[in-house]
Image 1: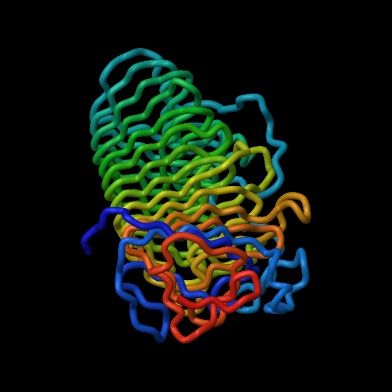
Image 2 (image 1 turned 180 degrees about the horizontal axis):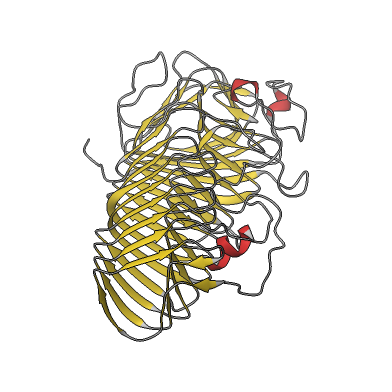
Length: 459
């Protein structure tokens, strides 16, 4: 597919509670057709559309009650938040006092440590802790084989009971390590606190118990990971995981897989960038972003299978962007950016956004859709936040990007859509906008009627 220089622009203010699902609007980029239709000719048109829910009454196009969320795929109803989703999903209120427990071995002196095995079988204890030192760990083995964390939140926030914990501004370089944990709250490699940096490469991390992420970053720390093999099998155990206080995570290459429920490949309350990696969640969303945080994926292979509705989970989706109001994720606008690579949803919608404002930017991504859902993006109120003010507000930017499926929202939500560099707007049923301007050559009526402020439009 050849990218084209931007030369034209088309702007529309869409008024719809549901695009495609209710009104049958198909959105297609260069070379992509909606279900049952042929692709339209690619061109240089940029399409900008602002979607709201305030004008369908003129046409009587929907019987949805104001303030009520749209119907969910599979007959689900909106309700409780997901069951952990690999990080904070429920009420906050954890201690603000840093509690990290004990360590079987603690390194506080700068140096290089090679071919050493560090073990722990006691509760609230790290097998290895590096505190405030500049340390190189080469070919080490870490075994956290027992001893549950006594307080899940201190494990999630501060690294209590993790296999390896770096804290207090430690600078830790890890190469060729093997890290295994089988204890509840046994995160594999944990980086905590502002100024703490973990650089880890060519290592294997395996965790098997609940609340045990692969690489975990909190409190403003930094983790740089290269060519890791990470496998988690417990519930609420994201392969790439962050929590209260966030931080910065940079991942290059490698494989990151999770098998438990509520365990996405990425759970983000930080700034996370992943390049060239394979990300797979076998029983969860592939990616979850909470609050005003950011995920960027470059040339990654991403697969999610949010197949098991357990506990508080009510909506099947591949990427969840939300704010739980737990206090564990900073409030504000979030971003999800994906350049190249592929994303597969084995069940549910591709994106669900609720109780947050976000920008989703997609370029040259190969999407594979679930057979049980026709929804590309759902923006709607859910159980988080204040009723009437907890919708999803999305700026969706498609650049030389093919998408298929519905874009839907409820009365509390909005979607601002930009399609550029060879995109076409193809209707699959009559559609309604409040205004239309600019170069409209990219509009394909496809045998349907486009109403502009209540009047049928024609080219």
